[in-house]
Length: 225
Image (cartoon, rainbow, N blue to C red; front, side, top):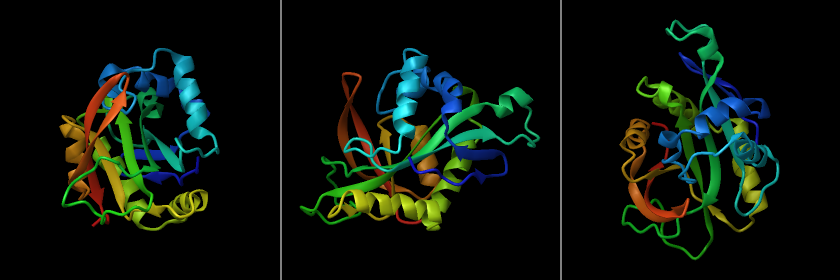
């Protein structure tokens, strides 16, 4: 994993996800209402399951199934005037990351951001999840805005993310911009993406997770403005 630079917003601190976050992360990933929108589609059964996922994700190893990636732990800033207690403010309330993956193979639309080609393609996908206690407070939009703006600023950590992808997969065409892939019916996340000027859906795909096929919609942002 590529270590991102810590970001701050008016209410939040976004710092690199670490092994020390495993307990807070499990409290997030063991929630059915959170994980039903994830690629996995089901909650983590126990702490070792979360630990295994975190260890693999934080590993520097890059494989065909796990490309270059970075991930932030989202916390409420300790000097905020929000009503949460200090304990709640220090607790991880969510994660937000960018990772590379193959361009959705079944995407088909006249508004696709690229022209069909036989050249293998990769995209950078934005993904996030928040604890239910943090829903409805605008935290998702605030965190996503900070990361999207940094991605398009060509900051050093974001350039490294792109360079590693091109080095690891020579000949692969990396699509410009940033993508969001959302479960059909997840209107909350669609709303967050639209606030960040993501266009779409520019395509869709069927994915399998937890033994079930789900329809996903693809959104695309060419810039943060």
